Image 1: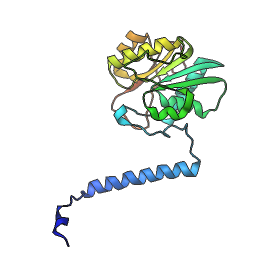
Image 2: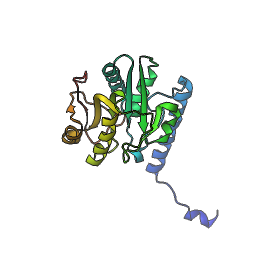
Image 3: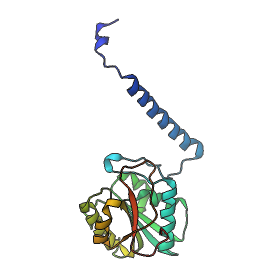
Length: 213
């Protein structure tokens, strides 16, 4: 046996078990995609990137918000999802022709959705394509990636530019005062849930009479 083997770092039993569990979960996810017929619009088809502050909604929450958006937009309505890909995916799962939807997102992995994907950086809130006309969406659903007033304020600029009037905002409960200040929205009774539990309590806010109350 080579003496150099003694210098090779060894993983602790705990670390090794965690690593094995991770790979097992990954294999199971891939197996599920294969066995069920992979749906590119299912929530979770593009995995969360925590470095981008991405936390997907639970399937129930995504469905509830998608239903609310459809009702609020009305027949033939246009829906914009700003940093809210879970809702966009749930809307697209419906394959419904009674509404149209676009996704504004910083993560370019979502460019797989073709012309409906619009690259969006909240630091440049009005740096939008020319064909994205002002006040051209019946409802805007937004979930700013960070719980800071700066992020909310800049995202609010985008929301006000896009919407004809209706706004559905999802953000932390701690942002209630700032949400009212920048978007004149009020907190709803409905409490959104995420697929992974978050430390911060999340809430929904609207500026119209919604079904979320």
